Amino acid sequence: MNIVGERRHTASRWPGFVVRLVAVLLLGSVMVSCGDDDGDGAGDTLERIHETGIVRVGFANEAPYAYSSSDGRLVGFMPAEMEYIFGQIGDIQLEGVLTEFSGLIPGLLAGRFDVIGAGLYINPTRCEQATPSNPQYTAAEGLAVAEGNPLDLHSYTDLVEEGAAFGTVSGSINLEYAVNAGIPEGEVVLFPDVPAALSGLEAGRVDAVGMGALSLRNVMNQMGDPPIEIAEPFTPPEDANSYGAVYFRKDDTELIEIYNQELAEAVESGQLLQILESLGFGPEMLPPEGLTAEQLCEG
Image 1: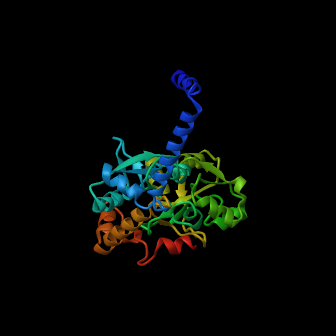
Image 2: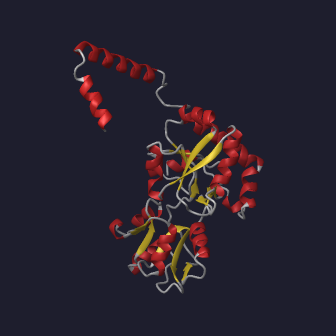
């Protein structure tokens, strides 16, 4: 702070024409740099990724989608798929940047990372802020309830009819599902992640937790034998489209195009299914053939 203050004091004694000259030069350099841009920012991130060999991946520690292992590695089926696809694009390694779920898109837009590689579904609201790849997986929705399902909850409609206290993860699409079903947004209990949400359910803070069934089951397995269960059967919301993707900044058009090309080839060759099967998943995780992000963004 002292150095900055001294520089300001010195600059105030410069002749006026020198100050104006510096200002003109600085403005000129900014205009030149803007003129080098084609207006849509296409290729900027891709060029840097090629130069550094690193793509920074935002994730939210949500297993089995993307999470940090005990030795600090970025693991999960999303990083596994991304590692293959970016490996086809170039000699590129993944570098994970841990972020709360609700901070994924803001972090992407702020430049904290290059892409989002978490369990983030495609929906019109998110598409307004960032651009998803074509869907890489599909996952069923689930509802965790107390053991024995005392309120007999099997849908979001049941939550409304029973006046059940509902919780989900902040930033998740499940908040939208709840509001659309008729639950006032202010009454939904938001948690930072799935473990916290299920702990809240176990402690009686909520009667049910809505999230992807994969995430719920994974955390429940880690909890040992908690007095909670997945509601069976469960009727998902009519507006649910549980298709997940990698998200990019809107101006990274060249990177998006190349990523989608490699993703399509990985699906066609069977490589994507092979990666899923190596991690214990099956073909039910693959999205329908021909389904695109553009279709899902239109709702």
